[in-house]
Length: 210
Image (cartoon, rainbow, N blue to C red; front, side, top):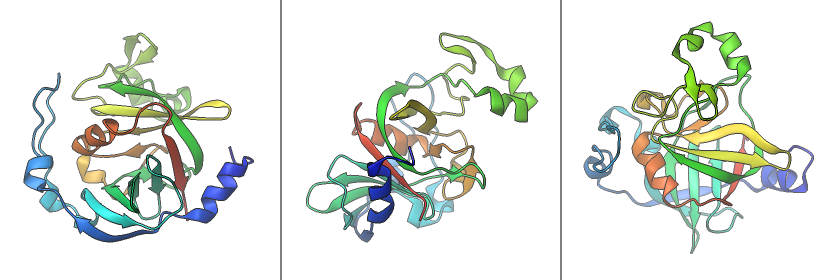
């Protein structure tokens, strides 16, 4: 994707997320979720830097409403809204050597998805192999409360197809605000459920490293 004009443009734009306009009732939004097929545990939000909690902010970037903008260095994800505003979420990002940037779009969305780890990941961590079972998409881990992708996954596609990167939930909410993943973008389950409901197939995603 690095040769596309869109990629070059997004590297220059930046999100420029500004002042906080409002915050939700964290005790409410980060509590357990009813109506899910698997348990969504309450998030201990008081133990996390408040920067990484969901909030409504001013948005001074160039991307249009309906775009997802990811600032990997700041560990923040913005869902751009009308009138120069955005909802901002804290994220976990790829650790050194696994981070990525560019432009993509959401071409597939799954609730409580199966996880199909890449062969390279299984080779790096043979312990994963013992968790694998046959799924509809190949050897993987079935969707559920213990699945590393959490409650939702948004699959990112570029000009050449599936990038292999996802925006997804997590079973490790304490890792939000850190560099921990193999390149994917993780949110606490409550936040990824909220984002999932706003980002349909075709949503543009811009990932910035600077």
